[in-house]
Length: 43
Image (cartoon, rainbow, N blue to C red; front, side, top):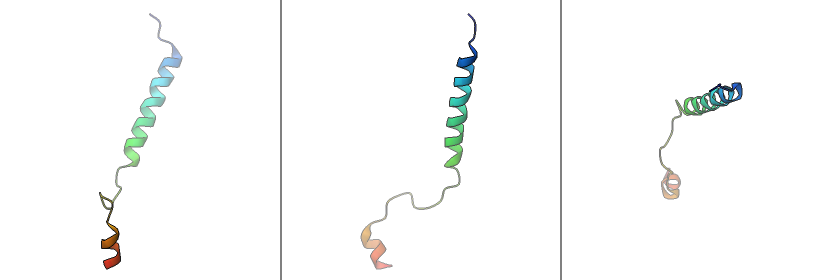
């Protein structure tokens, strides 16, 4: 079975997109939940 170059390009593009999306979320800081409106008004 021959390996088509288009299949290889598709696999590489999918791998790069998934890797970049995983790395883009690294280092994000902040609340892990949505704060209530009442807690914002008290501050």
